[in-house]
Length: 416
Image (tube, rainbow, N blue to C red; front, side, top):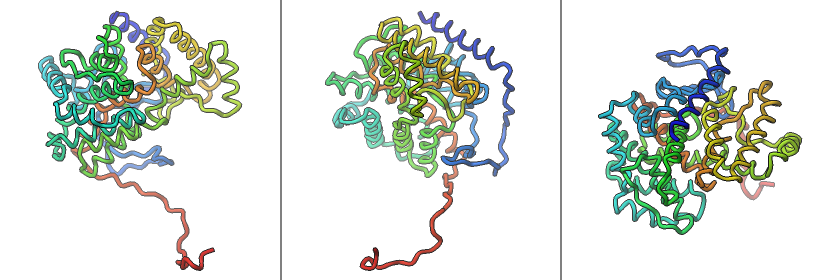
């Protein structure tokens, strides 16, 4: 079955190459001569904040690379552990290096009794799972005696701890929400397989483990997005890694960032049937309603991550007639949106459009989609924090004041 997944990813890359072959390759640079000129829009759009060797998003061509390796190849051949090593240390590991890294992840994945008791003592399940995740990471920081050491070496070790522990916390949150007994980690399993097990309570199938691995790889890094930038801003003050990742989780919680795939699934359920797509879409356009899962601040082409997730959604949807119906609705909705907005406005499916179907087919509840995103993105967050820390300069943009130049103070008894 994993061979079939490889073939699907390989075919997705072949389609991407064929459809984007006419787009020119980007003119990349190996060094930046600071300061740089840039046109900055609201929300820092267009601003250049740093230089990086970690990842690159080619928005016009629809391509994503980590350390020079494209996301298709990593999805086809790599694992989340290996990809995390690549992001943090800047190169693919040797077998010895990978074995040592996986052993360290396995060791840290098993929470100490103190960590286990403290996390499970939190009032989990009272709000959104991302709030639970945020609070649990804060607790881990309190319990880690190395957390206040902000040297690159110490922060690198904390990064590895966080990559290891977020899946465990996510599993605890998923099960506690429904009154089910949380499970400790099994370091003998891959991180992706263990995540599925700790959430579901069942041993994962080979197919589920591999699909989750691919999902984690695809979500691991994506440029200077809101949560990555947030983590970097916090750490630029020489705050600790735990605080930086707590901030990143808070940013990712927002529906304009990490929560979009939840909204996509709700949209597909609202449409109800493939036969309803045309009428629903026409009404949505008349109401100027945003169709979730389409368009991206950077991509003006088909999101490469969506290219991989689309065939995986088709594969897994065959497990359940309800999921298959959602997939068929998605395909028809994609066709409707692209036919109207693809060529003219360069609006195509993004990573969120098919990821929700993939998770739903694996029987993962909608509210847990964003915590899974965090399990993956913590590799990118920590990698970029560590990279920036080596040439750190605290972030300090300015706002343009548009208020009055001067007002006279009026005593309270004379104010209208």
